[in-house]
Structures are given as C-alpha cells and as structure tokens.
Amino acid sequence: MRAPRRIPVLAATFSACALFLAGTLAVADDESDRKAFLEKQRVKSKELMGELERFRGDKFDREIGVEVMTTQQFKDYMNAQLEKDLPQEESDAMQKAYERMGLIPSTFNIRTGMVDMMASAAAAFYDPDKDTFYILMTGMDAGQLEPTMLHELEHALQDQLFDIGKMMKDAEASKNDDLITAIRFVVEGEANYIMTCWAAKKQQGMDLERMGPMARQIFKMQADMDKDGFLQMAKMQAEMGGGDEALKAAEGLKDVPNWLFRVLTDPYNKGQLSIFDVKQKSGWKGVNALFTNPPQSTEQMLHPEKLNGPNKDLPTAVALPALEKTLGEGWKLLHDNTLGEHALAALFEGWIKEKKKSGGNGGGNPMRALMGGGGNAEGDRAAAGWDGDRYGAYEGPDGDLALVFRSVWDSEKDANEFIAAYTKLQSKKLKGRQVKADGVEVAIEAEDGFATITRKGADVVVIEGVASLELAAALTEGAFSGEATEVTPSTPTPAPTPAPTPTPAVEEVKPGKTTKRNPKARLY
Image (cartoon, rainbow, N blue to C red; front, side, top):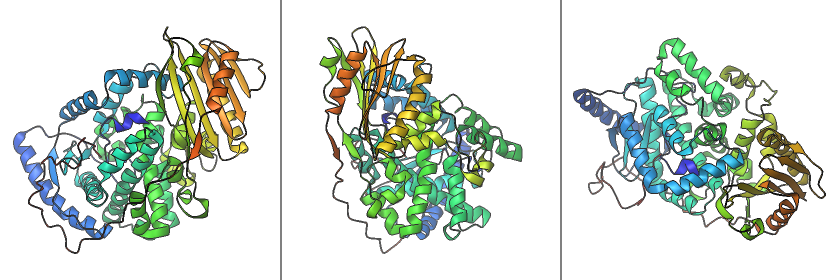
C-alpha cells in the first residue's frame, strides 16, 4: 500500500525477534559515550563491509557513513518527511479509503500510528541520499548490532549496484502499491536473507545456504510469524535474559492493524524466503535479476515460480472508468490503488481467523510454526489466483463513502474462492443482512447502504455503501467496462559488473554528504 512508502522503510527492525537476535535495547544519551560508540562502530563497519563483499561476491565503490539518532530525533525526522511527502489532505483521503476497505479500524490513525509503531521498534535505517546508515538502538549487544549493521550495509551495496532509490521512485510513479510492496520484498528480503545467513553462521555455526530443506524451514518459520508469534518470541527472549525493551517494542505492535503489520514486516521475513528459493535455484545471478528485472507483483514474490519460465505470470493492469457521474452530483474519487495478492491475504487474515492445519501456528506460536507453517488458510487460499485489481473509494457531498473494487482472477474457481471469503468478510465488516437481487452473487443491506458482489467469468466487482441495488448494478457495469490488460515490464537494466578491487574510498563522495543522485530521501 502507499502508506509504507511515504515514511522511512526500516531495515533490520522487524526480524529482531526471529531466531538469532536477543539482548537489551537502550539508547546512549551521554555525548562522550556516543562518540566512543560511533568510533567503535565505524571500525566495525569497515570490517563488515569486507565480510559482506566476500559473502555477496560484489565490491563497494565508496565508504559508508555511520551515525547515531535518538528515538525522538527519528520521530521528528519521520514527521518532517510526512509533511513533505504526504500532505494532510492526501493522508485524510487515505484514512477514509482504508477504513472503507476494512484495512484499518476508525480508531487507528494511519499517519500517527505508523510513526509511533516504527519509532518504537526501529533499530536502524539506511539513507541512500547520504550514503549513511543510522543506528537508533545503541544499547544492542554485538549479537544484535552486527547483523543489524550488516543489513544496512547490504542496502548501501544494493544502492551502489542497482540504484534502489530509482527502483522505488519508478515503482511509486506507477501508483500501484502492490508493485511497491513487491520491490520492497526484493530490497528488504535480500538484505534480511544475507543478515540471517551471516548471523546463523557466525553465532550458531549453521551454514544455511548448504542446509537445503532444513534451512527453508527456518526461513518459513520467520515468514509465517504473525503478531502473536512476534510477541511470544519477544517474551521468550526476555525470559532468557534478553531484557524487557525488546518485549516493550513488540508490545507496541499489539494495536497495529493486521494489514499494516503484514505490509511493513512481510517484505523482510516473507521476502527472505523468496530470496532463499531464488538463490537455491539460480544463485546470485537469479537474485541480481530481481533487481535488474524487478517483479511486477507481490504474487510473483510469494510464488517465485511465477517470476520466469513456463509458469511466469505477469499481472493484469485493471483500470476503473470515471464513475462519479453514475454516483450522482457532488460525488468525487477520494483514493484509488491496487491491493494485490499480499495485501488481500493480509486483509482476509484480519477478518477471518481460520489457521492452517499442517502444524498450524498455535495462535502465532513460533515453535509450532517451525513445525508446520502458520498463517491464515482461507485468506491465503482466497487471495491465491489473483491476477489484478483496482479499487476506488468515493466520497459524497454529505460525507458518505462508497467502494468500487474490481479484481481479475486466473480462473473462475479462483474467483469463486475469493467471493466466498469476501462474503464472510463483508458479513463481519458491514453487519447487515443478505437480500435477494438478480444477477449478483451476493447482496447485503447494511446501515450505510447496499453492497453487492458480482462475477463475470473470472472477473469480480464489489460495490459497498451505495443508496440502492439499482445504483450498485450501474456501478458494477461501469467497473466491468474498464480496461484490463496484461502488464508489460520495462526493458531489464544490465546486471552489474563486479569491481576488481575491494572497498577503495572515493574522495568526492564523502560519508554523510548529500548527493544529487536521489532527490527525495528514501530510507531502508
């Protein structure tokens, strides 16, 4: 969704509870302590750059700065970024649209909620505009801090090799939040994969790259972890002497809507599972191809077999025609975007609570997830088979909100599975009663108007919050008339040529100095 790209995207934050990292999290306030800490970490950073070069097989072409930022400074920075990148009017429109979709409750403010969530849990971030990464939690022990630094340094290497700032800028220009999340699966997933492999070998003596199915189970455990599992892992760490700060950070996520939790954390943990699968099949060449020829949807990252070969599945770009006149005088389009398979599954998980049976996750229990895989069975099944979508939230002159949501599926079977799950979601969200209506799969009369679900072949249109079934039918026909065409990806960027020598400093690009390469700051 758009929200996560409008605030700093943080690295090595949400996997702090996953397997290898433990310890107390505190921030040093004393200036002399801060300087000593920075000097030590700048030396360590150079050591880690060499280790990363050996692991990744690519070379840095310039030094990377290391700085410290307090939690309050970080919150102030994020709020300043929001003021520039997300005007209040746009933020208010998103808030209403997300509430209408059922992505967030009315009690959760998308703007302040994201800032509070990320400020409470963030460990570090990389700023490509300054070739610098910032450590937020300076009280981490070496078992936490070094993997976190490695993660941030990998973002710096990604930026030098592939210009990840441009990757995100190009994705943002598409106004397709599913594409943006897919790119984050690549960027965060690859950095998390390297961090996890490095930490496993250094701290546990485990070479995950050589462990095949057993390693995949470890990555799968992290990918399946939900909010309950995240909290349970934090409690386990606290009981083992890891301190209460990690638990406090995790508890800050308790009231975060499930969709937002998934959109912010899954690019790290589900992303690294996808990177593992690609790396096992095609080596670093295959991983590099994800940067030079990026995925076009989260579907491709959730199912890497759909990236290339006979099962390659490019998404369908769905367009909604202008429907304001159909809605009536004074109506306007408030916000429109694309959900994608990942966000749809997260939406269903928030409303439908069926857990997977193969081992389950025991309400998020990370150990049981390790044995069989967690997640939401019906929600995942209903979102699978997605091929494209577009939704629009419309506001009337009296503040009424209507939803038009068209989705395209791989088959009629997939469309029907989506309808079955969405009907359950609507029954909980709208709290209305089903009524009879010709030509629709489902019709509901709710307090805020009528809702319908209509299928034509493998296409489905959902309407919510309108004054009559007749208006719902007119909007449905209008939505079906919009264009739906397969996405054509851009020409792949050439793969990088590995540098012949290691890490020479480039004098004209100083650590901490703003460059003109990425005009808008994007943090990873």
